[in-house]
Image (cartoon, rainbow, N blue to C red):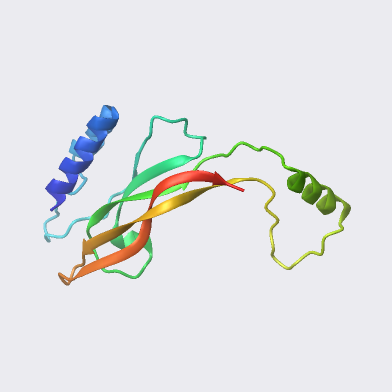
Amino acid sequence: MRSLLKLVVLLFCVQRGEGHWLHSLLGSGFGVEDQRGSVPSPARIIPIRSRRSSTQCGLRSILLQVRELGLGYDADETILFKYCSGECPRVRSNHDLTLTNLLLRGALPKQNGELWQNGPCCRPTHHEDLAFLDNAHRWHKVEKLSAAGCTCVG
């Protein structure tokens, strides 16, 4: 199964023109079993870089084990998790200008721990489901886990 995942990621990298990631996939240590027969956790997360500027809002990807998602699943399977990250252009609307002015004057009531957001943020437009096999050989499907597209919202 890991060999198939390596092949898929390899083809993904070649298709995207990111050949410099091949040494990470083909090098020693990633997906190699130890003497006890278990697969060690990767020492670092391997990012899959896009052709866009790294500061622009867009879809990013990392390889990680299902257990590293923090959802309580006992699974060693490695997945490609996609998420949105990056900056959005600050086009100031009349609402933004008014909100900033009211905040600076102290005219808005302060709520404990509440943060005011007066700029756009990079968010998923839609998501993908993920299916995987856990260590007890049961299939799980997690809906809307991975981002499938991103845009600036706000």
